Image (cartoon, rainbow over all chains, first blue to last red; front, side, top):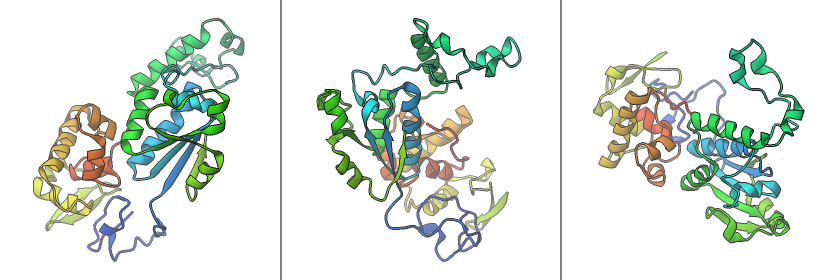
Length: 201
Length: 105
């Protein structure tokens, strides 16, 4: 924790200035390297529950003064396709960690029980699970995916779409969220992400 | 718990340096906290944001996140980044004498 020259405890604001001439002595943060920290999120999945982690972490990173970029590839393009971004879905097929905490009040242990996988195949189950997840997110005041994208762009996130995937899925640039700067190749992405911490989702 | 000395008076802070005693906060101290957070001069625009953060804490019990400042406070996010560069929500809460924002979004 930074301590200033007069022994005052100062929060870590990321700027070197307030802690001039003082050392924390606890082997804490190393001296800042060249430029601000940068994170790049590769979003490759288009399920609702796979979209949020990168959006929320990127939001937190921007708020902490970190440079953030997104690269949307394969199914992740659904997150930025204006025709699908507000209609991402959640299925618990293949996800044995799905339980309903709401059931706990009926019998102890029910709330952590895995949902039987055959249930996920039933007609209407994806719609119902999606509605439930969206409600749980809304109850926590988490914005919808389109709102989240608008917010990230306003905070300065840069967004790119994968050229190969865009061609494969026959998506036009006009179909993409206006915050998407360009459709770029894999090689361009490798250049842009130089020196960044990369998170693949 | 730690006691800082700002403007020649003792100010109690938590483990991260945020104020813990609301009655120790006043405008002079806020200007000093602003200087520490890298805001050399608190303009009327800075004050509007800080006052919102203070009153919103009174309403919700939490320091506002950036999204909350935009949605409930009507502030422009880009402007907030320009006024409080780097870690705006954290700096605003600090200057407002409130604890660090806890919410993720």
